[in-house]
Length: 105
Image (cartoon, rainbow, N blue to C red; front, side, top):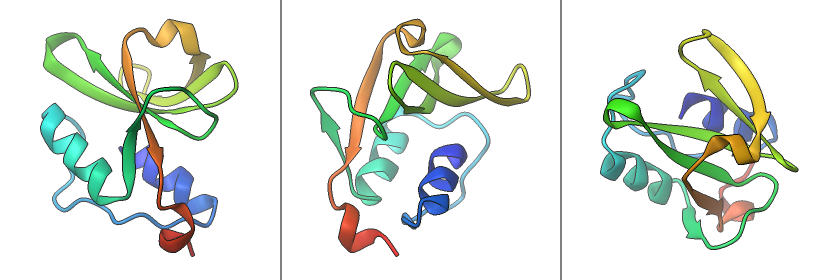
């Protein structure tokens, strides 16, 4: 989640950050609530700049930023930010910032 918030901030869009953000272990419901509170809504298609919510093994959930045919995300195992083909991301739910201008600096 931190990468998504930092990327939007770097683009001049400051999102309302969730309180008590841990590095891992958030439930899907808590992540969805944080996305909705920041102005994101579930999307049926995929566009550049959207956020991907992915379910990982062992009940972990993860966010990434969608680009043209690619996705950028913070890889915990590699301890760095990586870019992967979008098709390699697997099952995901797409979220889009719908209230962009009013929330952006």
